[in-house]
Image (tube, rainbow, N blue to C red; front, side, top):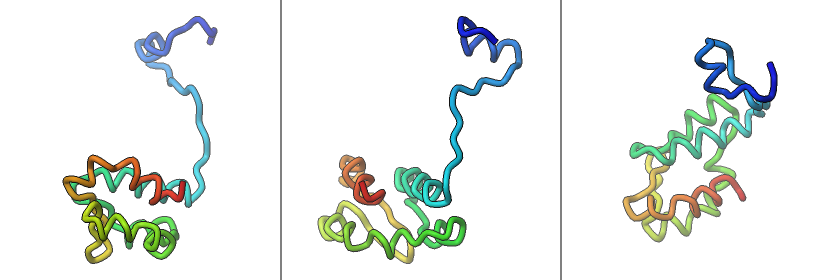
Length: 101
């Protein structure tokens, strides 16, 4: 495979296209699941993340997320975190706190 072959050529030929791959730790996968889930209208199911990846996001980040909950940007209900309508406009800020950035 030469460097002048474009990825669409590989797809057309039915060959695999892999530019970069990296192994994700359980924590990385938990963070990805939380990040992706929070963008959904139903939010993220924190007990499911804990069961699947062994990471208790709520125990680790609830204190930092509390200001968002108090401001009505984020809701926490029976283990599920959701962004409010207004919170969706501030999703990046919430995500940074959720991921401990």
